[in-house]
Amino acid sequence: MQKLVQPNRRDFLGKSGLVLSAAAVGVLAGNASLARAKANPKGDIALLNVALGLEHEAIAAYQVGAESGLLDKGVLDVAVLFQSHHKGHRDALIATIEKLGGTPVTSQANGDYAKALDANGLKSQADVLGLAATLELGAANAYLGVIPSFEDKNLAKVAARLAADETMHWSILAHAMGKPLPSAALSFGA
Image (cartoon, rainbow, N blue to C red; front, top):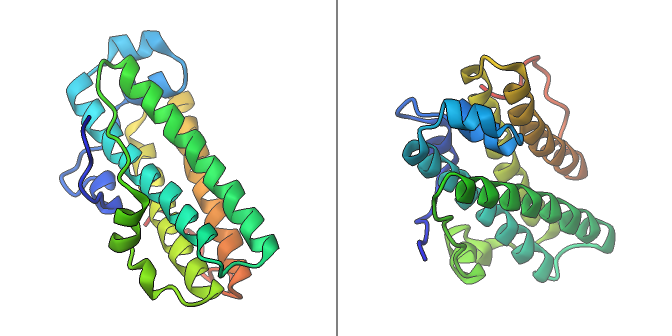
């Protein structure tokens, strides 16, 4: 099985101008006819695997936070809930990659993610929340970045729903850390 080397949310946004195609989102949305009509399987699979690698990272980050012993019960419950959302994203991405004929990247060991995320530096609940908020903001911006590539409003809606999950996560985490609301309009997706 393939392993993904430490993904980067900016790569998902597409430094090279690549974004998820309408075909990939068509499969995610359950619109197989659109997927067949506009498929670019190799490119879509590669991009979806980057997104899948990021979801694996988020799942692991929440696991590391949950196991750290640094989270109060209420915060731990929210972290586990957010992790379940990322597991849902992961499962949808795996199904899509497989429908396109690809091989989904596997997750790394949690220890590998912990090392990459410098989890040894987590000394307080605020540190855990800060790490999670950073990852969630990156995810929100990544998913928002793909929306303009879709002409079909239904496909844009799928990407927007993923971005909405990530934005909700970031907002709740920021509130829990006592961070102020963004003062500027259009704060996400830039």
